[in-house]
Image 1 (tube, helix red, strand yellow):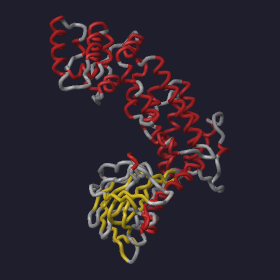
Image 2 (cartoon, rainbow, N blue to C red; image 1 turned 45 degrees about the vertical axis):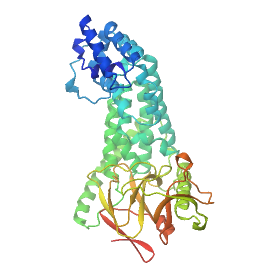
Image 3 (cartoon, rainbow, N blue to C red; image 1 turned 180 degrees about the horizontal axis):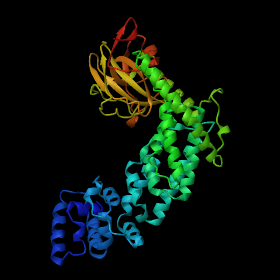
Image 4 (cartoon, one colour; image 1 turned 90 degrees about the vertical axis):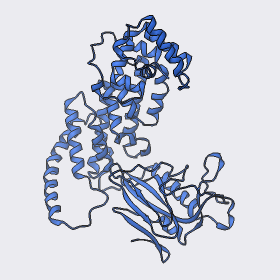
Length: 471
Protein backbone atom coordinates (compact mmCIF):
# COMPACT_ATOMS: atom_id res chain seq x y z
CA UNK A 1 0.00 0.00 0.00
CA UNK A 2 1.52 3.33 -1.05
CA UNK A 3 1.30 6.59 0.88
CA UNK A 4 -1.58 7.95 -1.23
CA UNK A 5 -3.65 4.84 -0.55
CA UNK A 6 -2.88 5.19 3.16
CA UNK A 7 -4.06 8.81 3.11
CA UNK A 8 -7.31 7.67 1.44
CA UNK A 9 -7.71 4.86 3.97
CA UNK A 10 -7.44 7.41 6.80
CA UNK A 11 -9.58 10.02 4.99
CA UNK A 12 -6.79 12.57 5.34
CA UNK A 13 -7.77 15.85 3.67
CA UNK A 14 -5.02 17.60 1.66
CA UNK A 15 -5.84 20.90 3.36
CA UNK A 16 -4.88 19.35 6.72
CA UNK A 17 -1.37 18.45 5.61
CA UNK A 18 1.29 20.56 7.28
CA UNK A 19 -0.89 21.39 10.28
CA UNK A 20 -1.00 18.10 12.20
CA UNK A 21 -0.05 18.24 15.89
CA UNK A 22 1.86 15.64 17.88
CA UNK A 23 -1.45 14.39 19.26
CA UNK A 24 -2.81 14.04 15.71
CA UNK A 25 0.15 11.89 14.71
CA UNK A 26 -0.33 9.68 17.78
CA UNK A 27 -3.97 9.15 16.89
CA UNK A 28 -3.08 8.35 13.26
CA UNK A 29 -0.48 5.84 14.41
CA UNK A 30 -3.06 4.09 16.60
CA UNK A 31 -5.56 3.91 13.76
CA UNK A 32 -2.97 2.42 11.43
CA UNK A 33 -2.13 -0.31 13.94
CA UNK A 34 -5.81 -1.29 13.89
CA UNK A 35 -6.02 -1.10 10.08
CA UNK A 36 -3.04 -3.44 9.72
CA UNK A 37 -5.28 -6.27 10.89
CA UNK A 38 -7.62 -5.72 7.93
CA UNK A 39 -5.06 -4.81 5.27
CA UNK A 40 -2.16 -7.24 4.84
CA UNK A 41 -0.51 -4.89 2.32
CA UNK A 42 -0.32 -2.15 4.96
CA UNK A 43 3.22 -2.85 6.15
CA UNK A 44 5.45 -1.24 8.74
CA UNK A 45 7.65 0.08 5.94
CA UNK A 46 4.74 1.74 4.11
CA UNK A 47 3.56 3.32 7.39
CA UNK A 48 7.07 4.61 8.04
CA UNK A 49 7.16 6.16 4.57
CA UNK A 50 3.73 7.71 5.09
CA UNK A 51 4.77 9.47 8.30
CA UNK A 52 8.04 10.60 6.74
CA UNK A 53 6.19 12.15 3.78
CA UNK A 54 3.52 13.70 6.00
CA UNK A 55 6.00 15.27 8.42
CA UNK A 56 8.82 16.35 6.09
CA UNK A 57 7.23 16.72 2.65
CA UNK A 58 3.75 18.01 3.46
CA UNK A 59 3.56 20.54 0.60
CA UNK A 60 4.52 18.14 -2.25
CA UNK A 61 2.28 15.49 -0.63
CA UNK A 62 -0.59 17.97 -0.72
CA UNK A 63 0.10 18.83 -4.35
CA UNK A 64 -0.03 15.19 -5.43
CA UNK A 65 -3.26 14.66 -3.48
CA UNK A 66 -4.81 17.69 -5.20
CA UNK A 67 -3.77 16.64 -8.69
CA UNK A 68 -6.53 14.55 -10.24
CA UNK A 69 -4.30 12.56 -12.61
CA UNK A 70 -1.71 11.71 -9.96
CA UNK A 71 -4.22 11.03 -7.21
CA UNK A 72 -6.44 8.75 -9.31
CA UNK A 73 -3.44 6.76 -10.52
CA UNK A 74 -1.75 6.20 -7.16
CA UNK A 75 -5.02 5.80 -5.22
CA UNK A 76 -6.54 3.58 -7.95
CA UNK A 77 -9.62 5.76 -8.08
CA UNK A 78 -11.57 7.51 -10.81
CA UNK A 79 -12.71 10.72 -9.17
CA UNK A 80 -14.09 13.53 -11.33
CA UNK A 81 -12.54 16.98 -11.67
CA UNK A 82 -15.26 18.45 -9.45
CA UNK A 83 -13.83 16.57 -6.48
CA UNK A 84 -10.52 18.43 -6.64
CA UNK A 85 -9.65 21.92 -5.55
CA UNK A 86 -8.53 24.50 -8.07
CA UNK A 87 -4.81 23.95 -8.48
CA UNK A 88 -2.43 26.63 -7.39
CA UNK A 89 0.40 27.28 -9.84
CA UNK A 90 3.27 24.96 -9.00
CA UNK A 91 6.50 26.94 -9.22
CA UNK A 92 8.96 24.14 -8.52
CA UNK A 93 8.02 20.95 -10.34
CA UNK A 94 11.41 19.48 -9.42
CA UNK A 95 10.24 19.09 -5.81
CA UNK A 96 7.18 17.17 -6.95
CA UNK A 97 9.32 14.98 -9.17
CA UNK A 98 11.69 14.27 -6.28
CA UNK A 99 8.75 13.50 -3.98
CA UNK A 100 7.29 10.96 -6.43
CA UNK A 101 10.72 9.45 -7.01
CA UNK A 102 11.28 9.02 -3.26
CA UNK A 103 7.87 7.85 -2.10
CA UNK A 104 5.93 6.53 -5.11
CA UNK A 105 8.40 5.08 -7.61
CA UNK A 106 7.45 1.51 -6.64
CA UNK A 107 3.92 2.22 -7.85
CA UNK A 108 5.25 3.41 -11.20
CA UNK A 109 7.81 0.69 -11.94
CA UNK A 110 7.30 -1.76 -13.50
CA UNK A 111 3.52 -1.25 -13.71
CA UNK A 112 3.56 1.55 -16.29
CA UNK A 113 6.03 -0.12 -18.63
CA UNK A 114 4.26 -3.47 -18.36
CA UNK A 115 1.09 -1.69 -19.47
CA UNK A 116 2.87 -0.10 -22.43
CA UNK A 117 4.32 -3.44 -23.52
CA UNK A 118 0.82 -4.98 -23.25
CA UNK A 119 -0.64 -2.05 -25.27
CA UNK A 120 -3.01 -1.27 -22.39
CA UNK A 121 -3.11 2.53 -22.29
CA UNK A 122 -6.30 3.29 -20.36
CA UNK A 123 -4.77 3.97 -16.93
CA UNK A 124 -1.47 5.44 -18.06
CA UNK A 125 -3.20 7.74 -20.56
CA UNK A 126 -4.68 9.56 -17.57
CA UNK A 127 -1.40 9.50 -15.65
CA UNK A 128 0.59 11.31 -18.33
CA UNK A 129 -1.74 14.30 -18.07
CA UNK A 130 0.61 15.14 -15.21
CA UNK A 131 3.81 13.95 -16.91
CA UNK A 132 5.65 17.17 -15.99
CA UNK A 133 5.53 16.03 -12.35
CA UNK A 134 6.89 12.56 -13.05
CA UNK A 135 10.61 11.90 -12.42
CA UNK A 136 12.60 13.09 -15.43
CA UNK A 137 14.26 9.78 -16.26
CA UNK A 138 10.91 7.99 -15.96
CA UNK A 139 9.14 10.54 -18.17
CA UNK A 140 11.88 10.34 -20.80
CA UNK A 141 11.62 6.56 -20.87
CA UNK A 142 7.85 6.78 -21.41
CA UNK A 143 8.42 9.23 -24.26
CA UNK A 144 10.93 6.83 -25.82
CA UNK A 145 8.37 4.00 -25.74
CA UNK A 146 5.70 6.27 -27.24
CA UNK A 147 7.96 7.08 -30.20
CA UNK A 148 8.81 3.40 -30.55
CA UNK A 149 5.10 2.51 -30.74
CA UNK A 150 4.57 5.06 -33.52
CA UNK A 151 7.59 3.77 -35.43
CA UNK A 152 6.40 0.17 -35.11
CA UNK A 153 2.93 1.05 -36.40
CA UNK A 154 4.36 3.15 -39.21
CA UNK A 155 6.62 0.32 -40.40
CA UNK A 156 3.95 -2.38 -40.19
CA UNK A 157 1.45 -0.36 -42.23
CA UNK A 158 3.73 -0.14 -45.26
CA UNK A 159 4.03 -2.86 -47.91
CA UNK A 160 5.03 -5.57 -47.40
CA UNK A 161 2.66 -5.29 -44.47
CA UNK A 162 3.87 -6.48 -41.08
CA UNK A 163 2.24 -8.16 -38.12
CA UNK A 164 -1.00 -6.22 -37.51
CA UNK A 165 -1.66 -8.03 -34.25
CA UNK A 166 1.18 -6.01 -32.72
CA UNK A 167 -0.29 -2.60 -33.64
CA UNK A 168 -3.98 -2.89 -32.83
CA UNK A 169 -3.44 -0.10 -30.30
CA UNK A 170 -3.67 2.41 -33.17
CA UNK A 171 -7.45 1.90 -33.07
CA UNK A 172 -7.56 2.66 -29.34
CA UNK A 173 -8.51 6.19 -28.35
CA UNK A 174 -6.54 5.74 -25.12
CA UNK A 175 -3.31 5.41 -27.11
CA UNK A 176 -3.76 8.86 -28.60
CA UNK A 177 -4.86 10.32 -25.25
CA UNK A 178 -1.57 8.87 -23.98
CA UNK A 179 0.36 10.59 -26.79
CA UNK A 180 -1.56 13.80 -26.18
CA UNK A 181 -0.31 13.95 -22.60
CA UNK A 182 3.30 13.60 -23.74
CA UNK A 183 3.26 15.69 -26.88
CA UNK A 184 6.13 17.92 -27.87
CA UNK A 185 7.48 18.97 -31.26
CA UNK A 186 9.63 15.87 -31.64
CA UNK A 187 6.77 13.48 -30.83
CA UNK A 188 4.42 15.39 -33.14
CA UNK A 189 6.78 14.84 -36.06
CA UNK A 190 6.38 11.11 -35.42
CA UNK A 191 2.59 11.54 -35.32
CA UNK A 192 2.66 13.38 -38.65
CA UNK A 193 4.65 10.58 -40.27
CA UNK A 194 2.22 8.02 -38.87
CA UNK A 195 -0.80 10.06 -40.01
CA UNK A 196 0.58 10.23 -43.55
CA UNK A 197 1.09 6.46 -43.62
CA UNK A 198 -2.49 5.83 -42.54
CA UNK A 199 -3.68 8.42 -45.05
CA UNK A 200 -1.85 6.58 -47.84
CA UNK A 201 -3.42 3.35 -46.64
CA UNK A 202 -6.82 5.03 -46.87
CA UNK A 203 -6.16 6.43 -50.35
CA UNK A 204 -5.22 2.94 -51.54
CA UNK A 205 -8.47 1.55 -50.11
CA UNK A 206 -11.17 4.04 -49.17
CA UNK A 207 -13.28 1.29 -47.56
CA UNK A 208 -10.48 0.34 -45.17
CA UNK A 209 -11.88 -0.43 -41.75
CA UNK A 210 -8.44 -0.09 -40.15
CA UNK A 211 -8.01 3.45 -41.50
CA UNK A 212 -11.48 4.46 -40.34
CA UNK A 213 -10.93 3.19 -36.79
CA UNK A 214 -7.49 4.78 -36.63
CA UNK A 215 -8.68 8.20 -37.76
CA UNK A 216 -11.49 8.02 -35.19
CA UNK A 217 -9.00 7.21 -32.44
CA UNK A 218 -6.61 9.94 -33.61
CA UNK A 219 -9.25 12.60 -33.00
CA UNK A 220 -8.25 12.32 -29.34
CA UNK A 221 -4.83 13.75 -30.16
CA UNK A 222 -4.88 17.56 -29.94
CA UNK A 223 -2.02 18.50 -32.23
CA UNK A 224 0.31 21.44 -31.68
CA UNK A 225 -0.10 22.06 -35.40
CA UNK A 226 -3.69 23.19 -35.95
CA UNK A 227 -3.55 22.08 -39.58
CA UNK A 228 -2.75 18.52 -38.49
CA UNK A 229 -5.82 18.48 -36.22
CA UNK A 230 -7.94 19.76 -39.10
CA UNK A 231 -6.59 17.10 -41.45
CA UNK A 232 -7.21 14.31 -38.93
CA UNK A 233 -10.82 15.44 -38.54
CA UNK A 234 -11.35 15.67 -42.29
CA UNK A 235 -9.94 12.20 -42.97
CA UNK A 236 -12.03 10.77 -40.10
CA UNK A 237 -15.20 12.12 -41.71
CA UNK A 238 -14.21 10.93 -45.17
CA UNK A 239 -13.36 7.42 -43.93
CA UNK A 240 -16.69 7.15 -42.10
CA UNK A 241 -18.55 8.10 -45.27
CA UNK A 242 -16.68 5.61 -47.46
CA UNK A 243 -16.63 2.74 -44.97
CA UNK A 244 -19.00 -0.11 -45.85
CA UNK A 245 -20.27 -2.33 -43.01
CA UNK A 246 -19.74 -6.06 -43.28
CA UNK A 247 -23.44 -6.87 -43.56
CA UNK A 248 -26.36 -4.83 -44.85
CA UNK A 249 -30.03 -4.87 -44.06
CA UNK A 250 -31.86 -7.24 -46.35
CA UNK A 251 -34.85 -4.90 -46.63
CA UNK A 252 -34.69 -3.20 -50.00
CA UNK A 253 -35.35 0.43 -49.24
CA UNK A 254 -33.93 1.51 -52.57
CA UNK A 255 -35.09 5.12 -52.28
CA UNK A 256 -33.08 5.47 -49.06
CA UNK A 257 -30.01 4.04 -50.76
CA UNK A 258 -30.43 6.54 -53.59
CA UNK A 259 -30.54 9.49 -51.21
CA UNK A 260 -27.59 8.23 -49.20
CA UNK A 261 -25.67 7.47 -52.38
CA UNK A 262 -26.22 11.00 -53.68
CA UNK A 263 -25.01 12.45 -50.37
CA UNK A 264 -21.92 10.26 -50.39
CA UNK A 265 -21.15 11.23 -54.00
CA UNK A 266 -21.26 14.93 -53.11
CA UNK A 267 -19.13 14.47 -49.99
CA UNK A 268 -16.57 12.25 -51.71
CA UNK A 269 -16.16 14.82 -54.49
CA UNK A 270 -15.40 17.42 -51.84
CA UNK A 271 -12.92 15.19 -50.03
CA UNK A 272 -10.94 14.19 -53.12
CA UNK A 273 -9.53 17.67 -53.51
CA UNK A 274 -8.97 18.02 -49.77
CA UNK A 275 -7.10 14.72 -49.53
CA UNK A 276 -4.90 15.70 -52.45
CA UNK A 277 -4.02 18.89 -50.63
CA UNK A 278 -3.17 16.98 -47.44
CA UNK A 279 -1.05 14.53 -49.39
CA UNK A 280 0.95 17.42 -50.79
CA UNK A 281 1.45 18.81 -47.28
CA UNK A 282 3.07 15.59 -46.09
CA UNK A 283 5.08 14.59 -49.16
CA UNK A 284 8.19 15.38 -47.15
CA UNK A 285 7.36 12.55 -44.73
CA UNK A 286 6.16 9.62 -46.82
CA UNK A 287 5.78 8.48 -50.42
CA UNK A 288 2.38 7.26 -51.58
CA UNK A 289 4.10 5.22 -54.33
CA UNK A 290 5.12 2.75 -51.61
CA UNK A 291 1.51 1.53 -51.61
CA UNK A 292 -0.13 -0.80 -54.05
CA UNK A 293 -3.00 0.59 -56.08
CA UNK A 294 -6.48 -0.92 -56.26
CA UNK A 295 -5.56 -2.61 -59.55
CA UNK A 296 -2.74 -4.60 -57.95
CA UNK A 297 -3.59 -7.47 -55.60
CA UNK A 298 -2.38 -6.99 -52.05
CA UNK A 299 0.20 -9.31 -50.60
CA UNK A 300 -0.87 -11.24 -47.53
CA UNK A 301 1.39 -10.41 -44.62
CA UNK A 302 3.18 -13.17 -42.74
CA UNK A 303 0.90 -12.79 -39.72
CA UNK A 304 -2.10 -13.90 -41.77
CA UNK A 305 -0.17 -16.89 -43.07
CA UNK A 306 0.95 -17.88 -39.58
CA UNK A 307 -2.51 -17.42 -38.07
CA UNK A 308 -4.20 -19.40 -40.84
CA UNK A 309 -1.87 -22.30 -40.07
CA UNK A 310 -2.65 -22.08 -36.35
CA UNK A 311 -6.42 -21.97 -36.96
CA UNK A 312 -6.21 -24.97 -39.30
CA UNK A 313 -4.12 -26.83 -36.73
CA UNK A 314 -6.64 -26.10 -33.98
CA UNK A 315 -9.49 -27.34 -36.16
CA UNK A 316 -7.62 -30.59 -36.79
CA UNK A 317 -7.08 -30.90 -33.05
CA UNK A 318 -10.81 -30.39 -32.37
CA UNK A 319 -12.51 -32.37 -35.09
CA UNK A 320 -10.03 -34.44 -37.11
CA UNK A 321 -8.44 -36.69 -34.52
CA UNK A 322 -8.57 -40.51 -34.60
CA UNK A 323 -11.18 -41.57 -32.05
CA UNK A 324 -9.61 -45.03 -31.82
CA UNK A 325 -6.47 -43.41 -30.38
CA UNK A 326 -8.18 -41.71 -27.44
CA UNK A 327 -6.44 -42.38 -24.14
CA UNK A 328 -6.23 -40.86 -20.66
CA UNK A 329 -9.68 -39.34 -21.01
CA UNK A 330 -11.10 -37.18 -18.24
CA UNK A 331 -14.65 -35.83 -18.62
CA UNK A 332 -15.25 -32.11 -18.06
CA UNK A 333 -18.68 -31.46 -16.58
CA UNK A 334 -18.38 -28.06 -14.91
CA UNK A 335 -18.47 -25.85 -18.03
CA UNK A 336 -21.71 -23.88 -18.21
CA UNK A 337 -23.52 -22.29 -21.14
CA UNK A 338 -21.94 -18.95 -21.97
CA UNK A 339 -18.51 -19.86 -20.62
CA UNK A 340 -15.30 -20.24 -22.61
CA UNK A 341 -13.60 -23.56 -21.82
CA UNK A 342 -10.37 -22.82 -23.72
CA UNK A 343 -7.08 -21.56 -22.30
CA UNK A 344 -4.62 -21.96 -25.18
CA UNK A 345 -6.49 -20.77 -28.30
CA UNK A 346 -9.66 -18.65 -28.55
CA UNK A 347 -8.74 -18.06 -24.92
CA UNK A 348 -10.15 -14.55 -24.40
CA UNK A 349 -13.14 -14.19 -22.13
CA UNK A 350 -16.47 -13.42 -23.88
CA UNK A 351 -17.43 -9.75 -24.05
CA UNK A 352 -20.01 -8.69 -21.48
CA UNK A 353 -23.60 -7.93 -22.34
CA UNK A 354 -24.52 -4.74 -24.20
CA UNK A 355 -27.26 -3.37 -26.40
CA UNK A 356 -25.70 -5.26 -29.33
CA UNK A 357 -26.36 -8.73 -27.92
CA UNK A 358 -28.07 -11.35 -30.06
CA UNK A 359 -29.64 -14.59 -28.89
CA UNK A 360 -28.10 -17.85 -30.19
CA UNK A 361 -30.26 -20.94 -29.60
CA UNK A 362 -28.80 -24.44 -29.78
CA UNK A 363 -31.81 -26.47 -30.95
CA UNK A 364 -29.78 -29.60 -31.65
CA UNK A 365 -29.11 -32.68 -29.55
CA UNK A 366 -25.39 -31.86 -29.50
CA UNK A 367 -23.46 -29.40 -27.39
CA UNK A 368 -21.93 -26.51 -29.31
CA UNK A 369 -18.90 -24.29 -29.09
CA UNK A 370 -19.15 -21.08 -31.10
CA UNK A 371 -15.68 -19.95 -32.13
CA UNK A 372 -15.70 -16.17 -32.52
CA UNK A 373 -13.21 -14.63 -34.94
CA UNK A 374 -12.35 -10.99 -35.60
CA UNK A 375 -11.55 -10.15 -39.22
CA UNK A 376 -8.90 -7.46 -39.37
CA UNK A 377 -7.82 -5.44 -42.37
CA UNK A 378 -10.41 -7.11 -44.56
CA UNK A 379 -8.72 -10.53 -44.62
CA UNK A 380 -6.83 -11.39 -41.46
CA UNK A 381 -8.81 -13.82 -39.33
CA UNK A 382 -7.94 -13.53 -35.63
CA UNK A 383 -9.30 -15.96 -32.99
CA UNK A 384 -11.13 -13.98 -30.33
CA UNK A 385 -13.15 -16.14 -27.93
CA UNK A 386 -15.47 -19.16 -27.65
CA UNK A 387 -18.99 -19.64 -26.28
CA UNK A 388 -20.21 -22.98 -24.92
CA UNK A 389 -23.93 -23.76 -25.49
CA UNK A 390 -25.40 -26.95 -24.12
CA UNK A 391 -27.89 -28.88 -26.22
CA UNK A 392 -31.29 -27.17 -26.09
CA UNK A 393 -29.90 -24.10 -24.33
CA UNK A 394 -29.22 -20.55 -25.55
CA UNK A 395 -26.82 -17.72 -24.90
CA UNK A 396 -26.72 -13.98 -25.50
CA UNK A 397 -23.57 -12.98 -27.34
CA UNK A 398 -22.13 -9.53 -27.87
CA UNK A 399 -19.92 -9.44 -30.94
CA UNK A 400 -19.92 -5.68 -31.48
CA UNK A 401 -18.67 -4.91 -34.99
CA UNK A 402 -17.59 -1.39 -34.06
CA UNK A 403 -13.95 -2.40 -34.00
CA UNK A 404 -13.80 -5.43 -36.28
CA UNK A 405 -15.92 -7.67 -38.42
CA UNK A 406 -17.01 -10.91 -36.79
CA UNK A 407 -17.25 -14.44 -38.17
CA UNK A 408 -18.33 -17.55 -36.26
CA UNK A 409 -17.44 -21.22 -36.67
CA UNK A 410 -19.47 -23.93 -34.96
CA UNK A 411 -17.94 -26.98 -33.23
CA UNK A 412 -20.47 -29.72 -32.35
CA UNK A 413 -20.29 -32.86 -30.25
CA UNK A 414 -20.92 -34.48 -26.88
CA UNK A 415 -18.97 -35.25 -23.70
CA UNK A 416 -16.49 -32.42 -23.38
CA UNK A 417 -13.24 -33.90 -22.09
CA UNK A 418 -9.47 -33.75 -22.03
CA UNK A 419 -7.68 -36.65 -23.66
CA UNK A 420 -4.61 -37.54 -25.67
CA UNK A 421 -4.15 -38.90 -29.18
CA UNK A 422 -1.11 -39.55 -31.37
CA UNK A 423 -1.72 -36.45 -33.52
CA UNK A 424 1.00 -33.84 -33.99
CA UNK A 425 -1.68 -31.15 -33.64
CA UNK A 426 -1.77 -30.78 -29.87
CA UNK A 427 -2.73 -27.86 -27.63
CA UNK A 428 -1.77 -28.15 -23.97
CA UNK A 429 -3.21 -26.16 -21.06
CA UNK A 430 -1.46 -25.30 -17.81
CA UNK A 431 -0.37 -28.31 -15.82
CA UNK A 432 0.32 -30.29 -19.01
CA UNK A 433 -3.38 -30.98 -19.51
CA UNK A 434 -4.53 -31.36 -23.11
CA UNK A 435 -6.99 -28.66 -24.18
CA UNK A 436 -10.69 -29.55 -23.94
CA UNK A 437 -12.62 -30.98 -26.91
CA UNK A 438 -15.60 -33.21 -27.57
CA UNK A 439 -14.83 -36.90 -27.17
CA UNK A 440 -17.92 -37.74 -29.28
CA UNK A 441 -18.20 -35.67 -32.45
CA UNK A 442 -21.36 -34.89 -34.36
CA UNK A 443 -21.45 -36.47 -37.83
CA UNK A 444 -19.79 -34.09 -40.32
CA UNK A 445 -18.33 -32.10 -37.39
CA UNK A 446 -15.19 -31.33 -39.39
CA UNK A 447 -17.14 -29.93 -42.37
CA UNK A 448 -19.45 -27.94 -40.10
CA UNK A 449 -16.49 -26.45 -38.27
CA UNK A 450 -14.99 -25.25 -41.56
CA UNK A 451 -18.10 -23.21 -42.45
CA UNK A 452 -18.07 -19.47 -41.72
CA UNK A 453 -21.24 -17.90 -40.31
CA UNK A 454 -22.35 -14.28 -40.05
CA UNK A 455 -25.08 -13.73 -37.47
CA UNK A 456 -27.03 -10.49 -37.90
CA UNK A 457 -30.07 -11.25 -35.73
CA UNK A 458 -31.30 -13.80 -33.18
CA UNK A 459 -30.89 -17.29 -34.60
CA UNK A 460 -31.66 -20.93 -33.84
CA UNK A 461 -29.01 -23.46 -34.85
CA UNK A 462 -30.00 -27.06 -35.48
CA UNK A 463 -28.42 -30.23 -36.84
CA UNK A 464 -30.38 -31.90 -39.64
CA UNK A 465 -29.47 -34.20 -42.53
CA UNK A 466 -25.79 -34.19 -41.65
CA UNK A 467 -25.39 -30.42 -41.56
CA UNK A 468 -25.96 -27.25 -39.55
CA UNK A 469 -29.01 -25.19 -40.44
CA UNK A 470 -30.30 -21.83 -39.23
CA UNK A 471 -33.97 -21.81 -38.26
